[in-house]
Image (tube, rainbow, N blue to C red; front, top):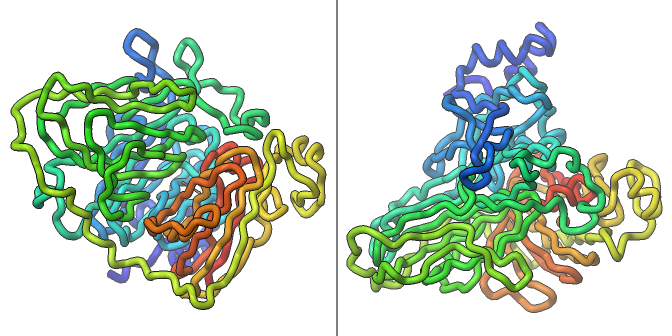
Length: 475
Ligand code: C2O
Ligand code: CU
C-alpha cells in the first residue's frame, strides 16, 4: 500500500492550506473508523446509587468505561481516527505497543494534543501478541481518572485457546479505581492535589471490574479460563488473590512467561497479567477475586459463580503461550549504561533539583507543583535523559530513594528485568512497566530498536504530573 502516511500528508499540505482546515481534510482523505472521546455516564457505584458522569471512548455506540475492547491479531494494524468531543485537548497512547513513534500519542512529545472538535489519525502495526490498553496521554491525571481508558487485545498468531493444557475461553478484566463523592460523581477539584501527589497519588475509594462494582462472573465447574487482567487505575497498586481458582501466571505486560502457580497477582498501575484459572468442580466451593488493600483485610471485588455443566477436569499442565519471537535479546557484553534516580515525595523530599532550567529547593519546587525528580530534574521534558543509537543495548540501573513505590514505564520498548536489589532475577520477566519499592534498586536492559523520542515516567499519574517524567531518544 502506498497511501501517503499522515506525516507525508502533513508536510505536503500544511504549507498550502494552513493548519486550521487540515484536520478535516485529513478525515475526508482517509476515512478511518472513529474512536470518539466524549462525555457520558456510567453506573460505576452499586445499584441504587446514581450513575456517574464520566469521560469515555466509543466506536459508534454510547461511550463506556472502560472503552470498547479493540482486538486485532499480532501483525495487524489498528486504525482509528480519534475525534475529540471533550472540553479539553486530548491524545491516545497505546500502552505497551512497540509502535511507530509518530503514533505513540505521547502528547506533547510525539504529537500536539488534539483540540476539542478536531481529530488525529492513528494507524499502526501491533507487532507482539498480548494484553495491552489505550488511554489518554494529555492531562492524564484528570482524563484517565475520568474514564479515558480501554483494553487493547492483540491475539496470538498461532492458536492457543482450545489446545491441550490451554484455556477454552478468555475474559478481559479491566480493574479501575475511582474517587467518588457520596452522590457517585467523580471528585472534581483534586486533580493536582499536591499532598496526594507527594504520597501514593490520587487514590480512589471505589474499585470496579469492567466498569462495575462487585460484578458476578460465571464459570463452569472444572472450566479453565484465561483472564486478561489490566490495572487502569491512576494510582492504586492492586495485589489480587484469585480465591479457590488455582491461578497460573502465563504473561506479564503482554509478554509470555513460563507458566507458574501464583498466590497473589501484583498489578501496579498500567501493568497487565494473563492468568489461567481452574474452576473447582464443586459448585459450592468458595471462589472470588479479592483485592488486598494493604490493611490485612482482603476485599472481594468480583465474585465467580461456579454454575452450569461441568467440564471434564483438565489435568494437563498449563500450556505456555506461543513465544513472541519478535523482541531482540539485550547484548550485555558492552551495554550503554544509564541510571535512573528517583527522589522526592513526603518524608524525604529532595535537595537541589532543577525545574525549568532553574535549581530549586523542595519548598520552591512544591510551590511550582513539583515534588518528584528523575536524576535531579523535575518534569525534565526540555532535553532527553539520554540518547542512544539504534540497535544498542541499554542497561539501566534504577534507584528509588523515596518512601513510596513507583511504576516505571518506558514507551516504545519492552525490557528485561535483570536484578532487583542486587539479587539477580531468575525469572527473566519482560515488561513495559515495572514496580520499584521504597529504597529498592532495579536493573533492566533492552535493545533500543525503535527509533524516535520515547517517554519514561511513573505511571502513578499524580507522580508523573508532579515531576516523574522524562524521555530518551533512539536514533
Ligand atoms: Cu500508559 Cu506514558 O503511558
Ligand atoms: Cu511514582
